[in-house]
Image (cartoon, rainbow, N blue to C red; front, side, top):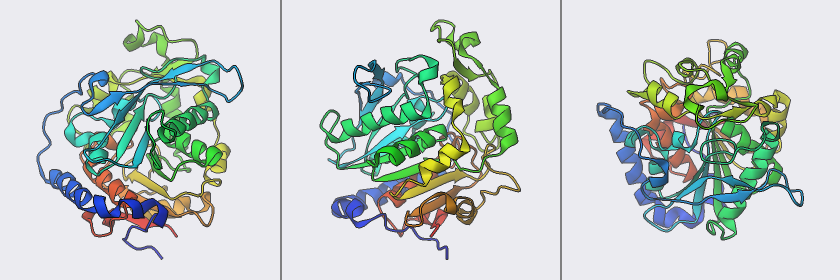
Length: 372
């Protein structure tokens, strides 16, 4: 039976941090939630990513396969630390045609990175291989499988001292980045929890078909004229993104322009994964999972495929994971696919923080319910 409480993730995940984190976390969530009552200020673009406040650029040398002699590529990443020493890090994986800037947002109130740090966690945000400041391998080599391999190398670097010696690593994905996070967790079993945003197994086929039809060669897009994207690299047609990613009634001011300005590329091979692949990933996941969905997500939600309540999400997802996997669902009201670009983004951030740290008495916990 569903209830409006957040389940304990597991004792190993929570206990080491409880003494030091609950007070700053509660304060951080109170500040985040209080911001929802304020008038949304005019949007301001983030500074250049290489100068993210509180973050240090840490790129990794990675391979697309574990084969000996595989080509090395640069994965662009930024490690951001909270005010207090922590053993927990969130690895943030952006969605298709998004860079790491999805996680830093348009302004302070849409900055997931800042909210996670305020709650006491470190974050490592990346430009997925083939996007943003990362290297661009041949398009046919950039697949869900190879990106999971790259993500695994980032997890390992966060644990083995290359980037830190974190004992808890949480995979946090948006949309296609959530698929990558699932594929990595299913294959390597080296993360402690997953936060999957903007993703369900059951898609709106008509809208997703329209979205893929609105992808075209990145070399034809004015934004990428000077960077000469390789063959097989795609991007969204100018002006097409709001239809799929934004709720026009609740997106923050300037979201459509910012989203177009900061878009990046995708590859033809990233589009070859199947629903069966996605289901195979989820059925191999044993760590706790949190789904975070906007109730007006155009790609996944409709009258016949509701996202209105956590119970709706649980009904749609409960058979996609092993019976012993703890699955929790949260729904963010009046919010489109790209959750971080909407006015309710602070509520999504607070809900995620409450779940990750086992806080049961925060207002945000009312938005989440365990599925089993």
